[in-house]
Image (cartoon, rainbow, N blue to C red; front, side):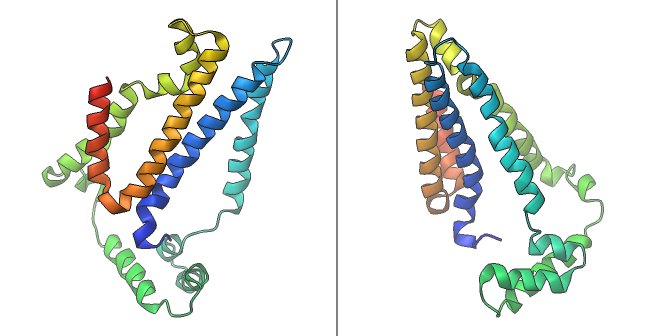
Length: 202
């Protein structure tokens, strides 16, 4: 549904939501840790209910996309939805493109089997290995266990929590750079540039 020239940036909006959420959690943990009596962790744990509730309610009211409606044969409803999204009545050309793409996809036989063909093997391999190695770099350990990590290398409790906040802020900053640059420089450039940074740092 996103305009083509903003599609990359809007796609990274998902990652921005995650990084902002991590930063907010780290900031809250920093202040909850200062509560007398040591019961602030209950607020940290209970606070996770808020985004979970938002996601649950949001999923109930999330509308279907025109693409999804066309796939299910609801062409008239899809056209009306497209008009509403674009804010104009003249959506015939885009609508025809969506219908043509849907029809073309239905002609493909054995789509899952096709993924195993030799010509698609490099794409399939990278699609699996990129997220696999992304996790193996240890980013989850750093993001989720940052206070413990910093505490074990000598930081005091407050300092370790503040270090987690700083890590979260850097994460948000890097995501904002990606949103700015993805449609300007391309995904491949950002991917290679990020890989070089990781290699140097690690």
